[in-house]
Length: 407
Ligand code: SF4
Ligand code: SF4
Image (tube, protein in one colour):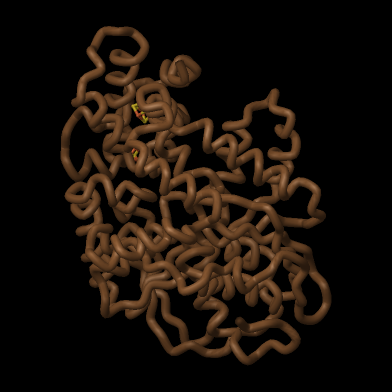
């Protein structure tokens, strides 16, 4: 009875309806049942109080949530609607919301931070035949972990800090350029990076499904792999991996777990790479980039106070680079991790306004830290480039720093 744990949290809702204007799903389909507070009432009535049958309609309300957290950030009472939806999914579906085939691929993917062997071959065939959503980025010829090996890496100039770099699944298997650029930008700014051994997926793909058992297993393995590494900071380029380490893993393990203390220590020193560099300060001077870009703030880009603004700080230090803000840069793009694969018309409807806002800026480049947003925005805008902000910085630093690898 996972949902029962949130009885008190749900009782804090004052029915102020601030979350109504925040929820991208409600704004798109205007169904009152999709307002965050209504979702909670329906889930409570169906799953706790027995006042409603657990029908297909109830499960659809449960499924049609992006877990974007916009409602949580808007809620004056701090009701954790996203965690409540995850708990309800766990209660309703256990480990199998989408069936055994999905679970097979998801577990292989999470274990390896990408696919390999036969599952990779099957995924490539499915992709080439158009059976997969086109927004899923192609698998890189080889994963980042095949070229960037565990251990300490060289840094430029005086040592300023020591960072452990967590490579998430999307960076490891698809956006390997982002990982290489993050390593380079850190090293160029005097940060010694340690690439750890034995890490697995951050656990979010399982958590989002309500598969708490797998998410916990991933969290335990990562905390075990990282807890003894001496470092000032745990850096990731993925805002969702960062959210997991900074917020979700300590809650998932709970205060009585044997690894609770270690998880809390890791949470306190988790930073997204541009957030970390913007606060540390750049010592490597960026060269000019004559370019106009716009910045999409991922929904999971708010777990430190400075994170959402960090890329802007970095861009302002690159000569010639012009940032044109889109209308509502922090509005959800509709990707929602893997939501865009399951709820195609809904996610595409949410994306429509975002695409128009991007077009209005006239920018030739979209910067965003979330790999899911990146793929979802890139596909319908083939004439625009989409990149992680750290890749923009790495380009501005290329050829200007001696003594570090530029992979
Ligand atoms: S997490 Fe996002 S999609 Fe889900 S109820 Fe809240 S605002 Fe709506
Ligand atoms: S914003 Fe929070 S308190 Fe207000 S209705 Fe929504 S969930 Fe309830």
